[in-house]
Length: 505
Ligand SMILES: Cc1cc2nc3c(=O)[nH]c(=O)nc-3n(C[C@H](O)[C@H](O)[C@H](O)COP(=O)(O)OP(=O)(O)OC[C@H]3O[C@@H](n4cnc5c(N)ncnc54)[C@H](O)[C@@H]3O)c2cc1C
Ligand code: SF4
Ligand code: SF4
Ligand code: SF4
Image (cartoon, rainbow, N blue to C red):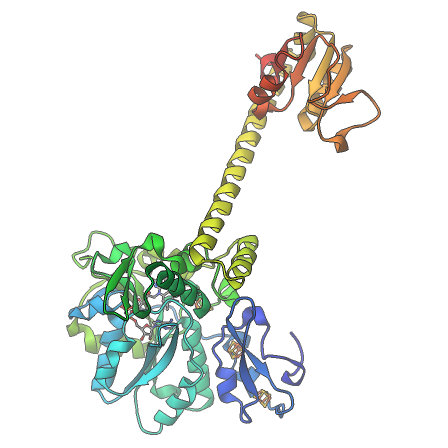
């Protein structure tokens, strides 16, 4: 997208926009507001040109437009568990809490994510340790972040250390904003490794499904609940009557759509420039799935920590006594988190289907099951195609080998006195067979081919359902479907029905 923001609806192309809203926060005349996408329900900035003064600040702050991002090669990698029970309310090893407590204890402030009701989540600036509980635990859909920029800017006049924790694109956006507002030195960024972020709409649909199933209203939800073990990736839901329900990973339709199938994530996540070994925040934390045979693995969640800057190193050193921590390496971290470090993709057909169905009010369970079925059918079809291609290759190899030894299909037919033949199937192999035999003095009685587009004037064509004239033999050129075709023809013709393979020893 070329040109100034005076000609644009938003600072960057829609498919590159991560929804960080730094553009809205920096705009001096508040000309940028949020607009909800009608299909995916993700939010995008919209410039109101009646207010815009063309200053260009929204484009300068946009991290997605920055061509030369500052990436850091990690200088340390660790496996770590927070020593306290806080791990029980954290998604991984409780590293967020460990960093956050340090920052608050040294007189700083912490921006993290809390629920805003049960259907939404938002970035919130905590100034006191009691506020940390609601920031603990990962909310696996996009947080509302627009208010946090100005709040951090205000705080920067009063606080010397300000921690921001969010997805890598959010952390990069806050960093860029802080650079333009000259408080970057005070910022400490902790990014959570991110496979992609779903719209809050899908989280809502998941909750509505659970509410409909139980007939109760949900009061609280915690993803990656650990009472049955971290590796079970369960979810615990609290209803307004105080009862609880454990939802297993197989019933977590948000996770299936967003993280198993990559379908409900934001479009920018498919071309995310933060999915690489080099990082843009001070530290990166995530689930250490690649860790094996470690005493840290007690099934209450273990984090990996990548230290990317000197600031990250200083803070980690200061909190290390509160952690059980062992050194590791970046390759081991990446090995267990392929899609946090590499780009994801999805079937566009499934994505269209998902939004169409969810928007028309279909239940999320049914939509997920439908898509899974569509995927399974595609895999089956692919397997069938590969199987057929392999058989074709095998057959061609045998055919060529036979020819090189002086054996030929025509020779076989003449030897068996099949001089007037019919061919079933007029695809590649059927056409090759016809050429071979006609060049060797064998006559073609007719071809059985149901697809009329393959018919031509040069011979007689019949469909399999037609009454078939006599011939010395029918040769089935559809290698994979011989058994089925044989079943259809048997009893309807008096001649032998051979497969291609019958003619090649
Ligand atoms: C959308 C998303 C996808 C992720 N995908 C992966 C992955 O593929 N592989 C992997 O190893 N790790 C992934 N993570 C990170 C991982 O799940 C944990 O969030 C991370 O390890 C921190 O866990 P913790 O125990 O240290 O702290 P927690 O207490 O779980 O962390 C809480 C803090 O994390 C941040 N956070 C929580 N929810 C959000 C949100 N919706 N948006 C922005 N920030 C949020 C906030 O700062 C919050 O205060 C993902 C996180 C998110 C939000
Ligand atoms: S160009 Fe300036 S005034 Fe116009 S929308 Fe962007 S930041 Fe706002
Ligand atoms: S990526 Fe962020 S700054 Fe850029 S247009 Fe989108 S919301 Fe605005
Ligand atoms: S995958 Fe990339 S673009 Fe998408 S939310 Fe995560 S960090 Fe942002």
